[in-house]
Amino acid sequence: QVQLAESGGGLVQPGGSLRLSCTASERLYSSYILGWFRQAPGKEREFVAAVRQGTGGTTYSDSVKGRFTISRDRATNTAYLQMNSLKLEDTAVYYCTGGSSWPPQDKWGQGVQVTVSS
View 1: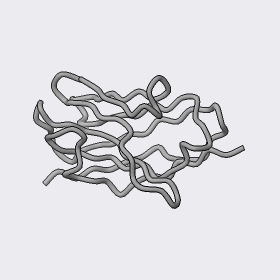
View 2: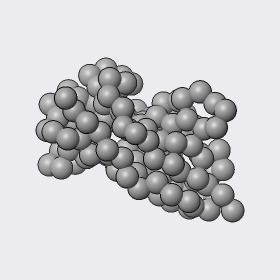
View 3: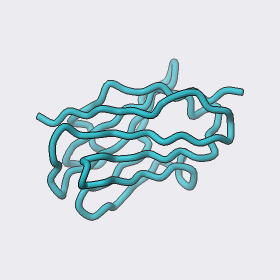
View 4: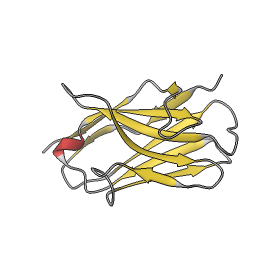
């Protein structure tokens, strides 16, 4: 079974940037979708972005559209989440997810902490 491993979290000031990575344990088929969810303290988990392996098609939540970019590298079975213009409210645990439907929720990584603070 596919396993997902995230990396790249950390502490950043408002307006800064971070890049998260998610690597799958095996090669993913073309229709597979990798994505990101996040959960802030005291809030429900929410969808952030997703990308389909074959076409590279993407989708974003309104809260991150224009600031975050999701991409994938099929050669390394990795998805990236480039986060720019970070805001305090982006502070959360970010989870990589995978699956065959939008948004992907069949597989979950362990999560990485992203903290935006001055």
